[in-house]
Length: 630
Image 1 (tube, rainbow, N blue to C red):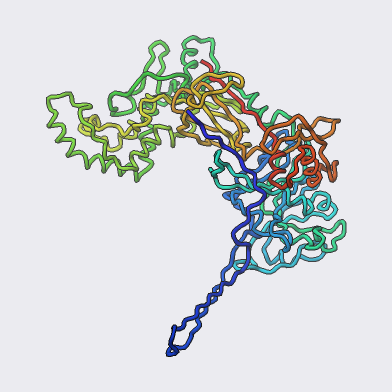
Image 2 (cartoon, rainbow, N blue to C red):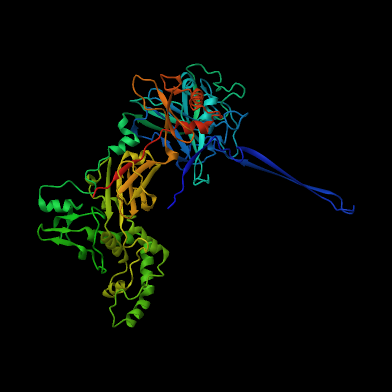
């Protein structure tokens, strides 16, 4: 079985088809007759004006930002990482420019501020930005079509004596913006290109760092290439428009991607509470049950056992008959005097979820009623035969109904507390494997299908109707895992691969053993749920190449800061270079000199652009492998 190779292409820049601005199109047509002067020559002309609206002042909306690194609000070892932001619109950094003489220069930059330097963002109106004066400097500008005085912008005011130490010069800016795109082995794009903007400053350990994506449109002198401070004194403020910002805290090395996963809690391996000395209780706890308060119909209160559909093992039970009420699915253990309410709760939940979806409940009810006459005729034809299962009647189920039951089969719309009924089952920084209990799912779906089941005849008719089960997933093994970790929120480009064979170390896993992912969902910022078609025995977690961060080698106190050389094809070498700084105390790297050293170290003869710089600055993250225990 052959597999295609996926590559990441780094591209220097991606120019928009048209720069921002007003354009005029003039069309002229001349009409005349050949060989005759009876009709004089006429000229028709038309002038059309349109405006290309590139981003300018408004804060970026979340749908424009693919990811930021280090992750917003996170604590981790980021002292060797260059902050970056990835934008879904690949042309955005080049839709304007820092000076009018060169459209290839990006107009956006990332500025990192330490806690003591952090400027306070202000939300002001565009008319206030235009009126900036005094010891706060902002260049004059002209409104473009669609802009007005009441437009809202976010600005930061940075003292000149701080800004001039951390602001990238023109040549550095050119090297800090690039585009990456996922392609196959034939360089055919597999995704939309993403624009990446790197910062030029390393975070400081033990401090909160704040990063701002600032607009620098026309802020650099067209002749000297220097930032125009407009004659500001050292303590005057330079006003910058901030399009996005986030903060993070740089702490110890236990909070990076690899360390978090390698230290993940896997005891126990499945969703179950610690065993107790009480033998009857231990039997239930080992199977994933939790004790829950249970109010009986007569008003009495007791404790009953419940387990979620995310089971510790494979269920052999199957629902063979439709159910009139949930109580039929309750199980009683005379040895403990306790009920098992798991399947009764599943049935009741399916019914409640469907009734809550009123339009769907009505559609199910009406569809059943429309089929009632047909079902009566079928019953007469097979009167003397075993009735159930003799005729297939669900071939024309409405799409909405079929989709609803397929979603229920993958436990979509099921509240989290039904999946994880006790927080101790999935503590922070933990990984748990599970089997999906097919009997639990059967009960859930039968409860959903019970809508409109009122009389005994309705129940009998539902016996005939085949439950709208997915033909592709029905009766197949479904397994998966739950991950509760900062890795989920911190690294959105998480790659997941599950295999049917148990493999340890870095052994190769044959691609034909790879399992299909049926469902992958974020249940919260830190909790990831994943289902596989089949029994997962090996789980690999890694990062998408497009979301791997850039930076220098891990920093050790008292030693020089270095960067291991990486070839342009992505392979790592044994060589290192010393990292040059514009201001080492502040962690501001000299990006232009850095590229010169990288080029010299790699003995490259080609021009070193932002694409080459991004490719060589990547900090690789190894694949972390987990093997499910028996």
